[in-house]
Image (spheres, rainbow, N blue to C red):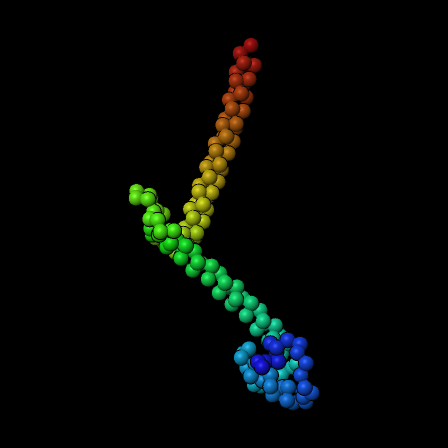
Length: 156
């Protein structure tokens, strides 16, 4: 049976509006609506609560899916880090197996991102320092050329 909100467009027997409201009341309570909002509030609030609930359920499903994917990554890492019997054959002796990650995958990704950001920052600082140095050299050369032309002009 289930809820009229989640059953789709299945035909129902004719019901009064009061019966439909009574039947939907627990669903809206589950969505977080107070009894006062449900019974005395504006109709538009019910639509907003349904949409917010749908969005929250989609986000929770997305989060659960991502968590399950990460769990799969951990399982794969474990399987790759221990010798396995494949088709009754042992992994050759002396074969270097990958290590089990010493940190969670998300932490590793965050550390890689921080390291990349730090390298980019250092590169940008080096480029800025080089640009300032080149500007100083250019300014010095112009001043030197000006002095040279002054000296050669007055010396003649």
